[in-house]
Amino acid sequence: MNDFLNQEWLSNKVGTYFIVAGVILLVWVLKKLISRSFAGMLYALVHKVWKDVDKRSFTSLVIKPLGFFLAILVSVVALYRLNFPVELNEEVYKYTVKQIIQSLGSLVLIVSFTNLLIRIIDFVALILEKKADLTPDQADNQLIIFFKDFFKVIFVIVGIMLVLRYAFGLNVGGLLTGLSIVGAAIALALRESLENLIASFIIFFDKPFTTGDLVKVHNVTGSVERIGLRSTRIRTDQKTFVTVPNKQMVDSILDNLSQRTLRRGDLRLELDMETSSDKVESALSEIKKILGRKEITEANVYFAEISANAIVITGDYYTAPVTIKEFNEIKQDINLRSLTLLEELHIQMAGNNFLRVRKDQ
Image (cartoon, rainbow, N blue to C red; front, side):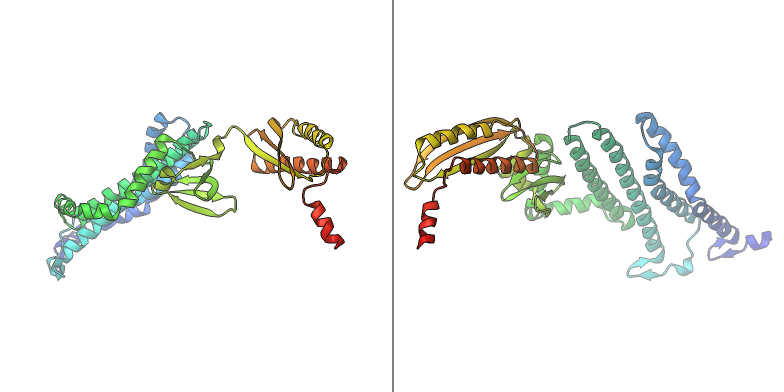
């Protein structure tokens, strides 16, 4: 048996093959158990910082990428115990098979580690979002979403740099120096994207609006659902999903309708020219009573003007910042009661005489 294990196949002893294969097989079979153990230790450290951490959420986010990374790491380390067979070390497009396999191993290892870091960022963001939900300010929530995406981008860029350095053997420092030569051209090509990125920082720190606010920018009116690194997503009153570049959200005149203290409604009645002054005075008095309802905080009614074709009564009223549905119901009730009032006072609207003449003809 010892003679068999000491036999040399492809530059390695048979026993060494068995040991490496056994280690790799064992770690892949026990991958889930090992990752749970490591996740438990990590959870214990995290729990010291955040007492209300949900262990199930932590393990569901971290355990799978952690197990995959540990299995890849142990497999790569175990394979390095083997001598690469000289017989198989052929050249493929100026690279040896050994270099290609080493590059693939480094690539998989770096990608799995980057994926693990991204999942950890998701977990940290989940914990911070739960804490932010306990506060009435929505700015915390959008700040967490922003920095979650921001750090993910940073880790992905660092991961790409590591792949270029250790998987492909490129000199990253020299590469960055070379890229600086064309940096001006790239910056010019990406000028709009950079402006949107800077605008996103302005939005988060200046806070002209937050997630959930009802805003109007250009011809778009709707609720802000998400503020990203490049654009802001708005759900319109038509239930469409509009994406507006952050630069436009900052540079344009933006009306944050959620920040208003009152909602304004207008009333305009054009009465027939034959309406007597007594009826006009009665109409003014009764309309003031109609606008005296409890939902209205302030109201004004005026005998505005006498035009060539009508006697004009105008009014404006203000309610609390209720929803648009509630406001429309109040407005509808005021309009109906005003119309009923004119019927009771036998006051005709301007233009009725013209209609009667056309009917008589």
